Image (cartoon, rainbow, N blue to C red; front, side, top):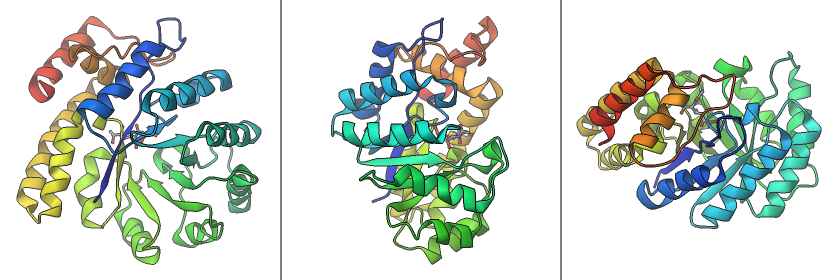
Length: 289
Ligand code: HMN
């Protein structure tokens, strides 16, 4: 069975502090209504790279306190400060997170040796399993098949969150590492990723769209490719509308339409305008009502 994970959003108050009640509501919605298999906590969708270390700890605590062991939890601990990543890896492991993940180090240009050291350092002394978070479009860091192989020499590195439109590389990676966990990260490209036999997916739009995506995955498993394609088309219509309306604030506005208090995005992300609100209402009515 392929696994469906929502990339958890963080609800913020207008001043950028964390809105705990709203964040808990989104976690509950994902577990109780969306019936996801797991949550990816502290990823891009959680606006994690805009948070202070204290706020990151707060989100990690809230998520596991609310979700308990009802669903699988992956804590993204990668950061520009390696010491912070090491601290957070230990922190979430002590809280009971069964898996961690870390984005490839970004902003500065690192050699592959530096990237490898970063992962091995994060895992040193931490009894947990890690998924490499590969998202070249945002980090500028693309790993080759040989580099993935070298990273996998560390037995604690169990897979990849693969947010990349390079399907040639995905096919090579899937076939070279049949036992590794590969979770696809681009929601709009789920169907081709399923065709290449990924183990599941993690995405931002699943917060709203999980039931349709589960139906697509079931249709795919049953060999009904026409139905899977039709569902992917509707999802992509919704994703296109969300992206055109600024995806992170829009996801939250649509959540609000559903009665879930998703709060604000964190500056410098945009505060919603009246026009965005009107468009979000339409997206809700067209795709999620
Ligand atoms: C996370 O780290 O929060 C995500 O899982 C990121 C995820 O891959 C999303 N990517 C970005 O937001 C950059 C996608 O779900 C993405 O939002 C979606 O495919 C629409 O493009």
